[in-house]
Structure formats: structure tokens, C-alpha cells
Amino acid sequence: MPYTICRAPGCQRTSREDSPCCSDRCQDRYDAGRKTTRQTADRERGSSTERGYDYRWQHESDAHKRANPICSRCEAQGIPKLADEGGPDKPGCTDHIVPVQGGRSDPLFDNTDNWQTLCWDCHNHKTQSCDKAIRERYDAQRTLGASVEEALLAATFLWKGLIIG
Image (cartoon, rainbow, N blue to C red; front, top):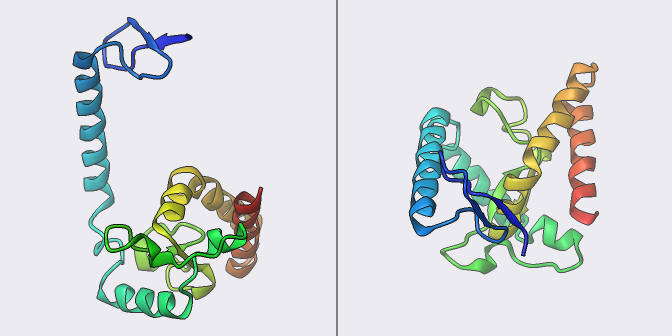
């Protein structure tokens, strides 16, 4: 079985490729460091209300999900599924196709062409693996002089390609 360097801070021992750390002790140190990093990042980005996800957004998001109850990604993959099918612990959401920056001051925040309904699993997948590339495509198009609508369209095509591809 292949080996890799232990990811715990300060440890240079090897661990199995299927485990990030060489021992339980190192795993605890690694987890503690990740938790601290995540907490710091959450504090720096502000609360959901500070980022624009307030009562008004909740009301608009709920209306969007009622009008579009099917998960966009699941539907594009040929397996239409209700976004809220995961139950109360895994609710669907209204997602910004191109991630917004700066809350409501971002012109894409309230642009309903930038909204899609996603189930819990698809939203997590998109957030973790695709958001950065989608925002970079949008920003690049804007830098080249594209309008908000043109850049949104280019970024949406990228997202559609990532869904199906």
C-alpha cells in the first residue's frame, strides 16, 4: 500500500495513503488545526445576515424554491429529484450559480438569472469543487469588458458543462 507524509503539524513520519495521519495522536492535532482554521475563516467572512442572507433573502429564496422545486443538477443529469427530498436535516437551497462576493452590493446577488435550486448533496458538491472556477470565469469575462448578463451567461455555461461533463 502506498504511503504519504503525515499531515499533522510538525510530524514527518509516513502514513498510509488512505489516512491523513500516522497515529491517533497526530490525527487529533490535525483535526484541531483544521477546526481552528475553519472557525477563523467563518469569523472573517461574517454571519449569513452580514453577507446579505437576511429575512428578505429567506423570503425570496423560499418563493424561488416553491416555483422551482426540482434540483437543477439532478435534473440535468437525468434524475429529477425534489430539492427538499433530503428531509429537514438536509434541506434544498436557492444557490447562486456564480458565487457572490460582498453580499447585496454584488450585482449578481439579487439577479434571479443567477439563482438555481439545488438539493443538499448537489449544493455541497458545487460549493466544494466548482464555485471558485465559476467565479473566476465570471470575473475574467467582466475584465474583458463583458456586461453582467454576458459574463453570467459564460459562467453558467461553464457550470452546465461541469454538471454534465
